[in-house]
Image (cartoon, rainbow, N blue to C red):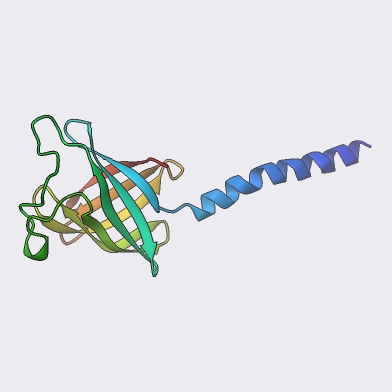
Length: 151
């Protein structure tokens, strides 16, 4: 009887932990993320990350303008086709592909200065945060932000 109880307990424990294991292995940056300003600590935007053909893309879904800022900002410092494009709906992340635990080989646009940087991402805190790094040349020459999962 004792062995049956152990077997049933082991099966129940395995069944309870299986979804956690599956979720951890399937963790993905796909979803809605909140970008927080490095200096003020206040939310700046919500970015929707999607995947198509094995590549990630991030589009600004909502902006949180600071007091005195334009409620519908435009990318005035962007160049080319993006010059004066509305920030809302703007694709700021593109071309990232999975490489181990990282997503690499992409680009990130900073709508505040109009510059495009190389980019890499990594899920942290059990997939609830996203470390987003923009850099010039090599990853050491850049800066990181932590985005917060919203869904």
